Amino acid sequence: MGWILVLVVVALYAAFLAGRRLYQNRYIKFLTQDEFIQGYRKAQLIDVREANEYDNGHILGARNIPLTQLKFRRQEVRKDKPVYLYCDSGARAVRAANLLRKYGCQELYVLKGGFRRWTGKVKKKNT
Image (cartoon, rainbow, N blue to C red; front, top):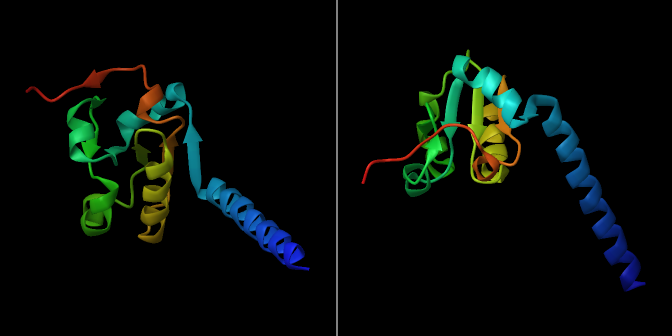
């Protein structure tokens, strides 16, 4: 009897995660590197990694607003312009997109695979 309850809970949780993912796909657009490159120059390009990660290399033209600071720095992101987000793998960028959606941003794009898979131009902080 106990294992049935566990199965029901696991099934409900899996359904919740699947539903959440489907809902996110309605307002977050996941882009390949080529698609990302085509649009980010006309948008706000935001690296949501921590400052030390950003300093070690970031996409040319990106602004650093770490996910950990986004709640307090949200006024730096314009609601009337597309927002292109990336992090190391994509997970933090999705979380940032969810936050920005709550704050009124409508056009949200996330780089598939994150910076880890980026092969385009990179800028590093001079040390």
